[in-house]
Amino acid sequence: MTKNTDQAEFFNHYKIGMEKQFTTTDILTQLNVIKERAMEILSQATPESYTFLALDTRKKRAISLQRILSNLKLRATQNGQMEISQFKEVKKIIKQIKLENWSKQAKEYPIIKASKTKQEVYENTDPYSEIPFLEPRDYMGISKDQNFDLDDLSLVTALTPPGYTQPWHYHTDSYEVNFYEGQSQALYKKDGNEVQLNMQLGDYAFIHPNTNHTIRNTSLLPIRNCSVKVPNALKDRGEDENYRVDGIGDKLSMINMGGGISEINFSQKSNEIPYITRLYRIDKTTITIRSNNDSILYVLKGGFESYIANKTDVLSQSDVIILDSDNPEIIIKNLTGDGLIYQIEKA
Image 1 (cartoon, rainbow, N blue to C red):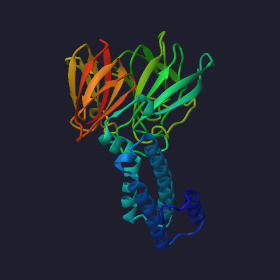
Image 2: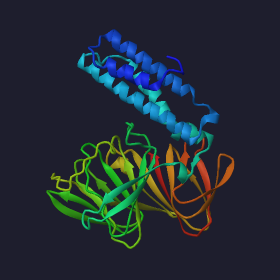
Image 3: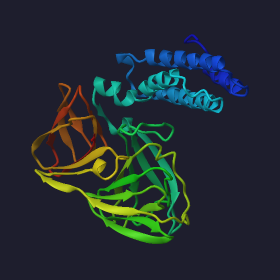
Image 4: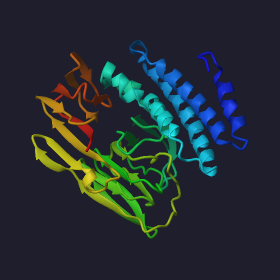
């Protein structure tokens, strides 16, 4: 398949192909075509092409290939042909494309400005007042259209207006961990009854699978919550205020480590969440943040001057910094006097 092959024709080729009974030879042929297409997309990634738009376009194409590969794998399963080693090889190539925004772009320059993160605005209705409101969300390292491995870093932030409650929802297979930047309530249902957890800065709501839950802002200001997402949490979502199970929810608090740093290690509570999270409270001093493993830094509050990758830059609210083996540390100076930086690091 050449680079000039029309993408619609490519997808139509598979739509037609999926309608017939596949032999092992047929599956291998289709698999090779997917591999060629994935390699073609991957080869288009050059240092000068690490723009947000180019990365986003390649990622969307990778998502489409992932869906096709999943359908082909399903067909192979139905035919008892699961032991085809090439599936893993092709999946690995597609994953490289999907993670470009958090690897190759970071190597080019590890700071991703707020305007370059994946942002969406949801129109929700408060279930108590029935008043509609807009809920802005930032997606960092995860998309509801993708499948991520357990150790892939992911963070979703959402703003809830004063006095409002997000829609009730649950995840059948996934945990959800919500970090709060201010006064609010985490709600979950146990046997149909509403249980309230009062939250402050540094608190987490640890919600187990199949537990109906939501967030209520009890303050007079918009409240941001940061959700550490595990595999398929965005896709594995159901919305039903009357969903009745023996729900489980816990309130956890960060441990003060001294020096303005608080942290919590979720991998000690569940191997489904292999993360350590930290909150840095930064006054008018200069600090160095070093990461032993890949991590995401997210500016919750304040303005900073930073030095990373041999470059000085200014950080503002909602900016993201990627720390990895190429750029394991960043030097940060607070410019505003009251700063908060949130970190997720692989455990």
